[in-house]
Image (cartoon, rainbow, N blue to C red; front, side, top):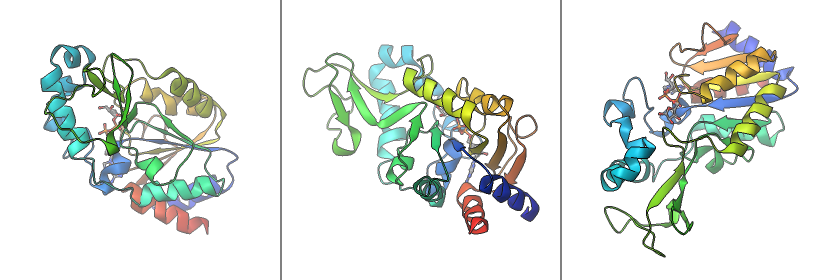
Length: 245
Ligand code: APR
């Protein structure tokens, strides 16, 4: 591991443009379960609740699950060491951007600024009728099934549902970042969901060195990854940060 760690630190030190690609695993040390694998959300809830057609045809049932998974549970969660190290590297101009699949807002709360939200952000809730934007952090769910306080219309969290397009600007920005970086960090991502899972491959085909941080091997490890650091994101990123001093 030390050798891998030293290799990763050397690649980061000599990089011109580093981009991080993060998945649910980076938030596990904040107390947020991943979607898949041990303790995964999809072991408890049916992913259908995030299917766009189901959401609009079973509005109340979908919102019950979405409220407990993404609002009741996420409410008091804080960034962990992994989020803070990435924010520090951005502040020191070591990290150019973060492309995140996560909708938990923890990169922003840690102080990262150039965060490309590939799957949107649960902190924003939109009315599908009048377009009212509600900030989830400042909103109390009075009803079991929420409706727009202004027009009574149906509310949808501003994150990407299965069957929904990726926000266009986020898609373009992610491609641009993947095609111009010379190191990409894959942190806590299983590689199971497209089109997000294409981003590290894009960086790889463009000649970037891929450093992967994950306690377990993934679809990337033997195909895309150049340096695999086995372990939890907070611990490994802190170790790399120490090695960079
Ligand atoms: N540190 C780093 N990685 C971790 C940790 C940890 N402490 N704990 C778990 N992991 C890893 C798991 O080994 C797994 O590879 O994080 C990964 C989480 O995988 P998923 O739950 O599939 O999360 P993600 O890759 O982000 O899923 C992609 O699927 O359901 C959709 O929209 C959802 O954005 C999500 C997408």
